[in-house]
Length: 185
Image (tube, rainbow, N blue to C red; front, side, top):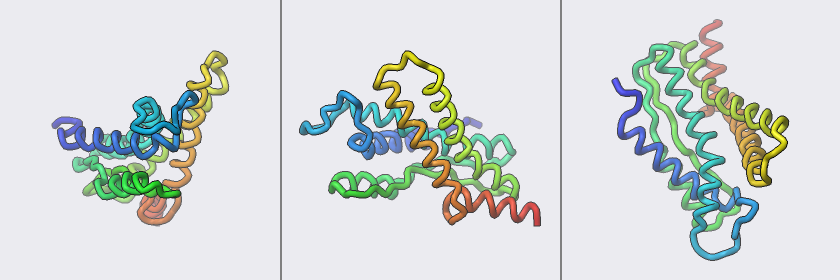
């Protein structure tokens, strides 16, 4: 069995492109031509570098932990409606942002497996947060652009960890706490 299907790879590519587009004006580079007309490929790439690892690593950790725990059915899906919503709000210059990038469907998990699988995504964001924090504190020869990228990586991953650990459905936190509750009681 392959680790990824062609459909999952395609969904990752589509999700990544949509995230780069959604965030390209919210995460500008230091030397950005933010106020110029047209599509700015450099801002798009910078937004990709910042957002895609945070979100893709989060979702893929759900899949990898589920597979590691013996769950045979763990499939990544891009949320086409959620991505369309984010792209549409950007196109109409909405002052707020709502989007759902993707999810991993998991079938047949026991409560503890479900809790561990649900926690894997936010744990990935916590690891990326501490990695960026560690580099920022120890590496003194960063360019301004590198420092900005690491700072934004740190902030986005901390936000994603806290946001996803809220014990409110459909966030991961609700599945973590429900799985632990059912395991213990």
